[in-house]
Amino acid sequence: MTDITFFLTTAEIDGIKVGISLNEYTLQQGLIEDKDKHYYDNDNPEYGFSYFEQGIEFIFIQNILNVISIDASGTELILLSKYNVNCYTNLEKMLLFLEILDIEWKFLEKHTFNQQLVIKTLAGVQLSFTYDKGHGFMLSKIQSYLD
Image 1 (cartoon, rainbow, N blue to C red):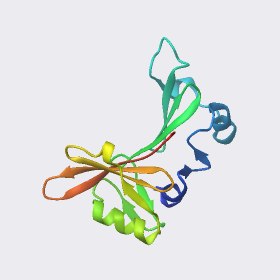
Image 2: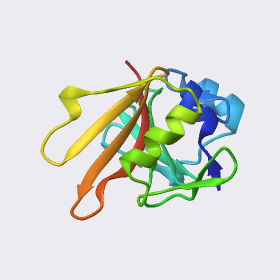
Image 3: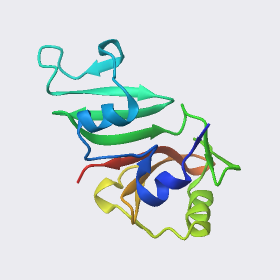
Image 4: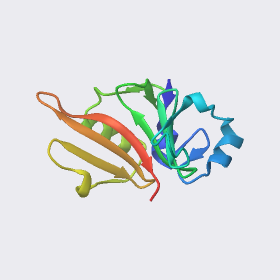
């Protein structure tokens, strides 16, 4: 299970934060084997790739970590070492967790449309929610992007 408490407050996971180079990542986490890289353009591997580790997607573009993405439906997540967080976590419960952690947030209007909404924490972590009829807005992704 991945505890996302520190990620929500710092946008950092296991000492990794968006903006670091592939070389820095490799020094901290070890070499990523070619077979584990999902290239965006096989003819131009320098363009970028995704790498998945324990349900977390690391997206490198031109050898810089641009995105850390956690899919709420495919990863076992916990908060404060005791609360399960997943695709069944609704907006109200997530806002309560953010309040408990004293994390400031705001709606991201440009990413809120149709039946999706996004909130962003002061640390830069974006939480995406999708409307599920009868259940409200449910957590779908937790991400940190390079600005």
